Image (tube, rainbow, N blue to C red; front, side, top):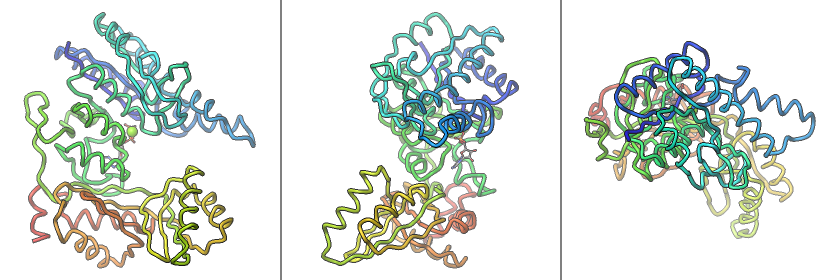
Length: 418
Ligand code: ADP
Ligand code: MG
């Protein structure tokens, strides 16, 4: 049985015209001899009646001054995808395609019970396989699963991508197609960098880094699962016939065309807005307080990034929404600290920069020329991250994109490090 999983994001199922396009994509796959499994996100964006954020706000308002329970929040947020799945399967039926909607749990996605950010423990494919044998197109509500005990869990923002890849891996699908509102994975977010270019082929590793660093076109966990199970993933536009971006290992074969990665130093640039930098000054020999700070932040579920520890100074970044909680912890410990709010992280990612000297010098040169101050840096073998003021975000992205010639075809960037 040749199976393909097709995932349609929120903007791809938002209105009847778009849903007709979805039907076309399903029928195209069927005409090529595939059995499609469809995964959908909630319809539309914040403000639209059935979008995830709208449901969340509805709940927050209902609870008045009290915080909604995590359990109830997951129950209501899972409804967005369920509404979308039922409407999509009804549209397929109306177009003569036998179809049935299932919740994530009904589709066999078993989660670990961690509300709002659940991990998938297992996938039980039997029910879906039975429907596929009967030539039914199943529309699965993305972003959710169910515990062994029957509790509904959501998988975190962007989690429908993960649902699609889990199904793709568990059903032995030939590939997972992620349909969205851009033509593929681009060298930077096209909303901020006008001349961002589509990248034809990318390795799991590069996409994972871009996704972790904020390129929200695909969820990082989805890429991780795809990498573990060697599932080919294609990101493309719902209404455009362009080929999109193929994600695979360097030797992956997708259909007839063998996988060929662009050879370049820098693959793309991702960004994360909404950060705050925290710098704590303390005595060089105060190891106990240092440990206390990190333990208390962890206990309060505050995730920290770009951590730099020097003897008398510790600095890290947090999400701005965690600033109040963080300051209260540091205040109780009586520490002297300073905070720079309104920061953003810009990350330059590229397999080709491994062990290559000169990339950081180029980054600093490009930004300094534009008088952009770098507040802090961090790096891994294929990523250099820079913390800057959020007001400098769009200029920084465009400057680095130009400096590394990312809108040119591969090969063109070699000269800048020569
Ligand atoms: P969906 O609802 O289909 O899941 P998302 O909004 O989650 O769509 O992801 C698509 C958006 O990701 C695009 O509209 C684009 O603005 C943004 N994006 C960020 N970085 C990139 C990138 N490197 N390439 C393409 N799109 C990106
Ligand atoms: Mg998404």
